[in-house]
Length: 360
Image (cartoon, one colour):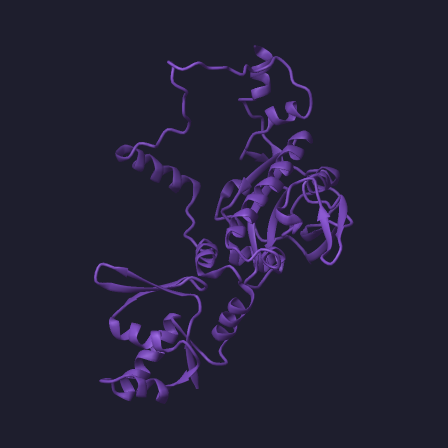
């Protein structure tokens, strides 16, 4: 059997220790210089005898023992193993290098806490470390031009003033037309631009870097009129919903970081990135940032359309990727659920900016 170090392995120095981190599988451990000596020699497929010959001062049994430990910890992969296949897929498909890879895959795990525990932690933190200011005033000694709130707004500005993130949702259905409009005005392809020698590029109502359209829309339906519960994919080219998985989706809190406020939602939209679409044109890892920003463009349109229909759209990036991507049928190094919009019927909410404007 042959072995090779993982292509997603990062080694850091912390105090007097080497800390190994495999960002693809979220494995972290501290080791000594001997482990580093083994790992640095495994840049290509190597068997145990070859490795032993390249190391001086180590017995064959100690090399085998260290190698097995490194395989178990994820620093080294064994030829023909599932871990080796996963590693090879990353090498083959991920074109943006280890730094963007470490950020993307490193942000897919995480420990989820309840809303109550989170609030308690913040209250304790605030006792010792006050929050930084969340807005910045202009100095009084400089000339200022103030933009007043108007007593009335024309559309679409009136809809914008009504948009709020209201996490208290009623356990009531939303209409299919409203949900469909959320996709129509954010993800639907409205035209195709034909570039000779390159191909057709889809155009939408939201901007996309290089018109590469890296996102696909999925929706987990719990309570939508005219749709049976299940997981659906939205085809932007013909504005259709296709059933991916029939039956009630997983409980929304289990998909969204144990956020209990999502439980009553009628549906959750997931924006799934297909990185290879953008990688084909852009090999610069900065493109990852562009794709993340594009998710915000799409989601903002969805939120405004939901508001227009009297619904609420609550955005969240707290996604349990293991549960969610299994439910959506999404897999592979270059596909990932990056953002979610929770849609439902809002409970009465005070603090409407439009009402403030109308009141003077």
